[in-house]
Image 1 (cartoon, helix red, strand yellow):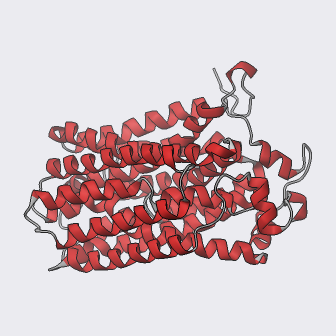
Image 2: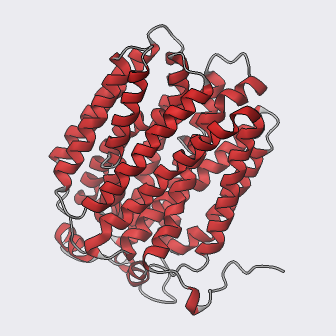
Image 3: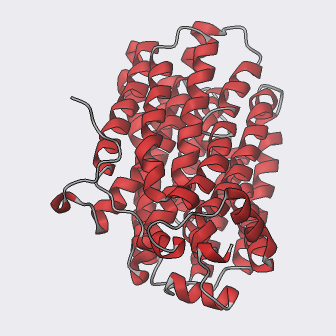
Length: 438
């Protein structure tokens, strides 16, 4: 029996409210899940297919994955498509692409298959995540917008808990265990794709488009309008700065934490266990973030998260390398900081600071910059880490980046809290912009 991808679901099955938020948030679960699956399995893939690598092959594989270049390119393509054809358009196809990439990795027998699978996973993730933040922001109640968007961060934090948990349990199976972890992501992606068929299109996007039969503007027209307004350029610079600087450390924590712990003397199973503990704390911290983000000052909540992130890396870099307290202290502190992190606030501010016709495209552009930077550092991070005092060298760079992200985000915090998106548009542009204005 064939399935019509464009067939509208039955009325009584449409997803709204928290159900739609949950369905969309799964983009973040499979994003982080794929990153952690790569992190937990990279050593095993290396033993099987590139045992004499000096870090170069590992760097290339991770750089072009969902952690970096793959997601960057996907976001640059998917964001404008999301604005042109609708939020639901992305959800119709992205997870099918993701599942295809996941299957290639699951059955990979050499480095080229791994590379192709990682790239496809990255493209799908990059297209989906900005669309998800946009959709949730446009459909959530104003007074609970931060809480709903925070649910996407909760899904992001659950992915590593499950991923590292599976890595610990399946460690005795070796490479087969890694294949099972990727296979579970394929299953989750297909189930989520099926559920998402019941999502309704964003009302805000439909209104901005101008109704049925109206031809949407080209991606180039949207991008030109985006860069034409000074308010947008300032927002792009602000968001790119805080998210890129923070993500330099966060991406290395996600993809290379097991490698860092291995360099400190922990075996693969111990490293996965420490990583899982860290992500459990991240999950708890994210729940707290959801409960508080709409109620307390954006500025000081952001500052708290940034300050704790800086302290966590100071502990990791300068603490005794042979002490379990160093790894455990880092895991706890980074986990606490990740709730009110730059990524969490970016996911709220990025849809708030841009008009509906180019909201997803703007996020895709920033996401492209962020993941590209992650890709560049992923190319050199494992090489430097393998050198004498490698953790110290990398750590000083990342501590500096986190410090800058904290200062910039605290000083230039947007005044958008608890305001309807239409009101924010009026305050920033003096009008509510429609697609026909582009």
